[in-house]
Image 1 (cartoon, one colour):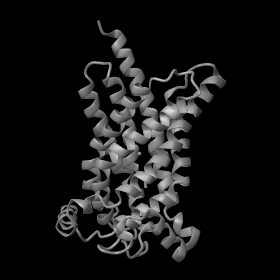
Image 2: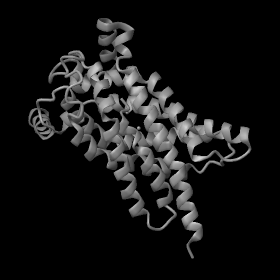
Image 3: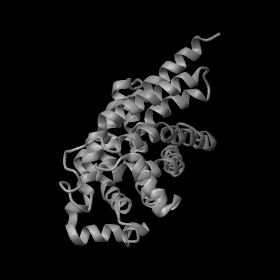
Length: 295
């Protein structure tokens, strides 16, 4: 939703469309439109993600590229954005349906947590290879995306593309455990205070706050994920031990190192949450209206 880079937030538009897809006709057109919108916003927010990655890089911000070539690696993000979004929200919606807890039940937050966790595990199967290639391109702007992809396959095989899978899942699950229940709770509270369902812009505000808060508290896990993905082949960090990576950052850079890139990460995810979680409610409402108007 992942850092949970801006591309991770593009999953929310897919959620909006897939949610209606299970019950409404013509969902393929909406799904494609939503995917295009998600990729477009990923391109807009991509510079913030590049800056965040370079701030977290073990070689330092300037040596990793500074402000030069801030769109390095963008093809990888563009290719992975749509299927990653679809995989997450199809799983999320299915698990929510499978658990079918009553909407008034106190177990609703637990259902959202379980559904989001399952969605992250599945989505990371697509997201991690994209992230590995993207982040290496972001700190090595002299290399092209396809060249980096080929080098990873040649040197490390398929396992190289999934380096950091565990650390990514361990980052994304806590993120979703914070973001989705908080977003749902804020909407419910706002609806209760004004005595009617929140408007789309209000849902967007709740999404921005929930995403930003989750981004801040999970930044150390994002730093560990970045270090693991960027580590040299054969190094101890490349083995994927999250605690070891966190300890290494703490030992060399302290608390500042653990929260490296927190500001661009939070800005990107807050903006992404505002746009896409707001678009979720708007798209869902539109699909329901169209469904009711159909013969």
